[in-house]
Image 1: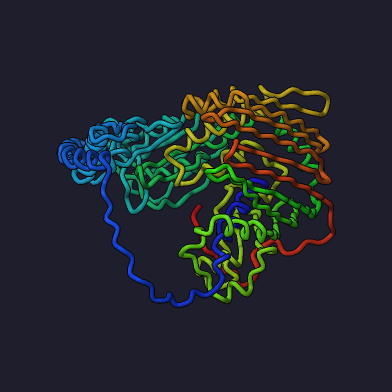
Image 2: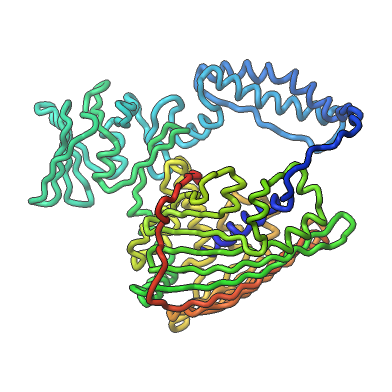
Length: 563
């Protein structure tokens, strides 16, 4: 929730920069026509254009040839750091080859070259429907999966045996039987039939209706993937960009992730148990200041503040916010008047907006949906209905049973979406590695009912593997954080980071502490002669007997942002 709070604070500040241009634009007085400025390209730009024009056709022809074969070999783009004609020429040649190749490949194959490269790297076949399990595509030596009536049909043996199932074929009855090796379950499908039977144990037998019947193709039995996978308790995602069905054993992944965070999960469970069935009101105040330095080193300060009141029944949460950006915006306009150029807000908005009390509401439902409403934002976006709520997406978690929430669910659930499907495994592994370095059992020290985690930047950089450039990894060497949590709900977090960035010192400090009744926090970050941010927070939490509505109001209009 605190991450979302920070996000919306930043959003509100950015959007509110438009508000100082409140006056309705006056007709522009007649002014003498400005003299036309003729832009003369630099030597580098001239060289780049020449190199690009010469190399693009070569890349295009090679892309056409490889696209017909479905075998991408994209030329690397290597940029230069100089500013001469020759530097630009070399850069233009590299860029022209790269872009020309990708355009030619697209023309010949109808597919994106980079997408095909990534498919091949995971054992997939460009141009066909692929099935991925455990981060790798399943190999189909003869018959490939197909889309039939919007359903993914698969060669049953190749996929189900990868999922740990045993497959048998009876040619007399033309029936395929799939037996689980881990649970007592048998699935029977007959060629041409739209029904399937699932037997669990000795007496439990159910009949299911299929969207598409099983059939024979190239000597292989083709069956609907989603029905089989979900019957075997797998989640199936579809990544349209890669034309790949991704099968996820989320139960196994959940158990694997949670096994790395037993201490943190235990603390969470203890606190959730103590809060079960109670209603809470939380009041937060935040004050902060951003300091910016111009090229002459002159510092300008931009103060802001925020208050919020949150309500929760343990399943849904509603946060009512009020931003005070008046001083910050006034100072920004005075310091950087160019920010208002070309920005106009209608007079109605100007008269109704109090920059010291900009309201907003955040709503998290038990189904995991996140909604946000800010009247000022609605107006700036041209949304006529003031009762419009923006759906920011879903956490992917069912919050109706908070007592069963774990770190594994919090990490895995947001990744199980079609848009993340192809790289779901990599995203999960990176997220878990980073979290484990910070809050995993291996980094924990237990003392009575308290657990302490000590994080240093080297461990965090190591957890990210090759995701960080060497220079960035080196910068993390001096980062450290210590977090202590107790089963009673008490917590204490301190952190610091001092580094040198291109001759300028970076300083970061974090301190916060509290318990189930509230707490305080402080954060500061500065880069010498460039930027500084200071934040201070206070939180008060109490139980209440009644709560406001924690659902969308009647007549609410929802705009789904698809985040």
